[in-house]
Image 1 (cartoon, one colour):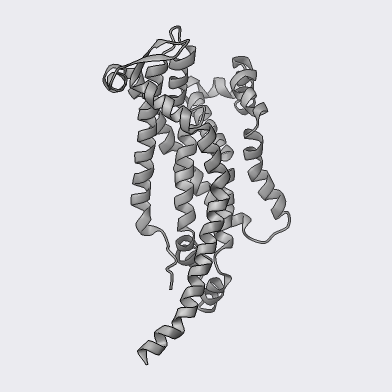
Image 2 (cartoon, helix red, strand yellow):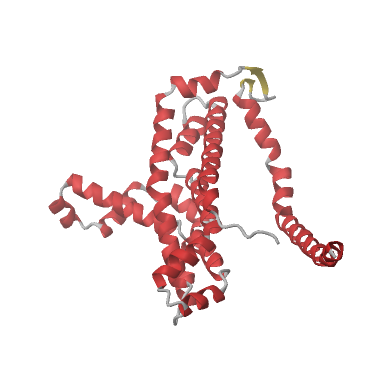
Length: 304
């Protein structure tokens, strides 16, 4: 009898594994262009950067190097106070922005997931900064086309001169910093909002219907149904916002690395490569910690 039951379950199990294999194949095909692009355009530069971080360039024309060992890494960690300072500035910026971006994005996604007139327009408005900020024109505007006078004029629009005089220099600076933080959160929330929307739309409506039958409130449904079901998206968004914060061209550490490598009187490509690799390892460790901390809370759909 038991053998008959096992045999009868085999077709269903076989069908499940065929479906699973098909889903895996679709996933591999989806990431294949990125894998090919990385192999063609990134593998060799990554290798060259790693090699450079352990070497000293003796001939720039023919690229001749000599082994330097951990010299550049030791200098970054023990002999360069500016490098450690940029570390703390980058981490402080991360702590100030990442939690707020995720909370704000989740709130907006929950609102945009409801049915109301003009929902598509509001979704486009919140995603518009991602489209505008990803082009070459915006890159030129932020890094070359906007001078100090233009930036000061933009600040005066937010905080008029009369108001700044009344508030005083310290309070004006605090308000300006707060407004910069808010604008940064708004600017970087487009992709997390879309990810949270995808997670919210994947929650089965039958769960909410059953909860309403049991007289559950909206607040209870959010904490007991919505939040547990979108925990995979929360993990994805936390990892995304952390990496996005550290890879932003305005990040303090990246600025320091670029200045050391390209804008100093004597370019220090080897030392810049070592700083970049230390920064990369730090990011990997931080992402691993996020996975370890959030993994017990992530809802998992178990295969039956």
